[in-house]
Length: 635
Image (cartoon, rainbow, N blue to C red; front, side, top):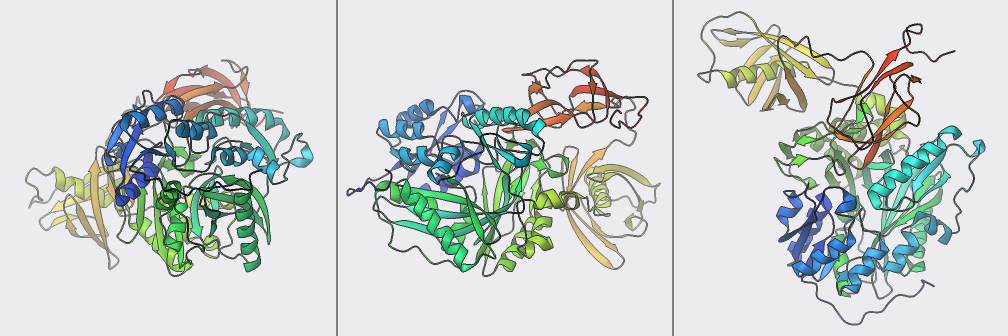
């Protein structure tokens, strides 16, 4: 019943667009609107009052509150904001309400133009369970041992929210509950379903664009196989290594899916490719995060095309031709080495080399908070060949200036340069196999010395070095690989250190020579953090405070967040096993499990559901079994 398209003969002129989103996608939509001469309206939560998207838009409207459920998921408030600000259209971006048919209808019922697909198409495809039924695929109703592993998945939304791999039947109920809670928090819809988990497959998708006159474009393929927690990390277009037959089949299936629901606008049909066969996953009835790689390859502005389609303009009969290859990396404020823990704090500086596309919702000096996704930016490179695009992006990330919370920058660079990725042999299990090697620290042995020399020059009363010999100076720094003690001396010729010649040293630049090789370090300091090239160091006191200690087995909050759940029946004095989940924290729209570090007894429990905690807060203490000593499982 969705086979016909609505024919629009008149052209609607859009002059003002409310962007019902935040962060980089809101800024990206505003950029295109400005190029088209269209005024923009931003909406913002209290936490986003000074966010970049509110500053680049022409007008901003407050949504009282901070949690998504109170702000960006309140369609009624957003429609009121659009009317109050005089907007005549709404662009939903991605996430939040972008795939909510009720919101789309409310926008249209208010007399506003909806820059997206018809509500009926959203209803048909936005729910993954209904989409699979439409494509003739049934979810798992009853899960047995023979079905494992399985994937628990949110029926609404995307971005890895509400998604869990279950490898033990005993874990299924708990993971279903966690997925429901996460999905409800992120999308306002707690429906989840279970499907087989395919190992060794590649995540490949097709970008579609359809108008109201019956034309549907298939704008090539994208490979999004490199994922953490089922959320994409590196994407590229076109998907490498696909046969012409398989590529044609994917295009045909994508166009068929669009026509089946009378689709209009930009959308994506996703597949899991194993060998030379394809398995339908879902259709995302919105713009995708990774759309810039398609834009680079096809030379189109998908947001501009969305607006033109919403105005009633027809697409050309044939899509533009593809040129070259594009790769995108998502730069997150997170620590991949510690369960991808999100990071917060002040972003002091973010810059990439020229010739690289940077889509971001932050500018220098902005704060990264706890309420939303930790995505800092999308960094995109385009080149004539895949190898050139990968090399260009890896080099740009390597040279990028990122001063602020810890990020996944090093992981991205190593991933791009990994032989498996370079050879297009990756699949969705890439990080399961390689995370340890990709996150093993590779410290620069001279960075601490450069930090110490820059700090000494910056603190000198006269802005220079004393012309007298002195006793060795000692500085201590912490990096990702541990603590470092640096010794140097002031001499008549300037600073000196054993085995290293100091060519130049001032507060912002240090040049060192070792074994005949010169190394140039740009140095910046913010509080106790020192940024030396791509290395981040924390200045430590020379004599640590002996009282700054925690009891063995202490569980500290790895990030700011909210305690959302305590394990059933968990009380002080209860026995626990090493690795047993004890409580769950929610931060940046994701839930994070806090597990027992050893087998023993829960001697202290400070956490309670609903409690807000800061990084380093003591949540609980597990005392190891004295007989076991190392926390081995009990007999």
